[in-house]
Length: 133
Length: 111
Image (tube, rainbow over all chains, first blue to last red; front, side):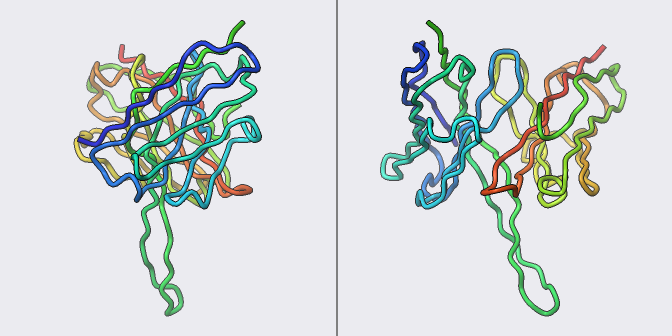
């Protein structure tokens, strides 16, 4: 069974740090991009960061750049999110999500062009982070 | 303020067909495919539609998606009480280094 299990959430004071972990099982973790998505209480979904299979590419939403760091350990089938300088607005449920890049070929003016479509297909149950004094 | 625009609410009666719209721009929906997620309150989101109109295994045929230009739609036919949930559209945005963007979500009520 494909599964993602987050851990590491909790209550932390403003300005503090927390490290989230995500344990993956049931699929070849090293073959996929991975993302973190969060949801503040009563609010919608917000993508936080993602990371390429070999860690050569990492992307972040502007509001966490310079404060959060995404990383992974393919040998341990694990994804991480180091969160520093936490603010009240970082309070949310944080989901670990499998990030799929599906390639397909098409002919354009006699040449084979590879394009991609993207989707996030497997979600963990989430871990709650509360930033409050 | 979400990058993709969805109506905050929608409603219908059992058996009815409803649609939920999602509006974006050239850098997201105009350039990439659209995905839809269903979230029952208190649970994690689940992928409902990917690549504009594809259903993952296990998703009923009642759910369908479409895309035109910089807009997309989710249709639910034969509405059932268990369809009451929040629905989110999402797309990859090619701005800067790239990022995922979501709609603000649509709360569907089955009357």
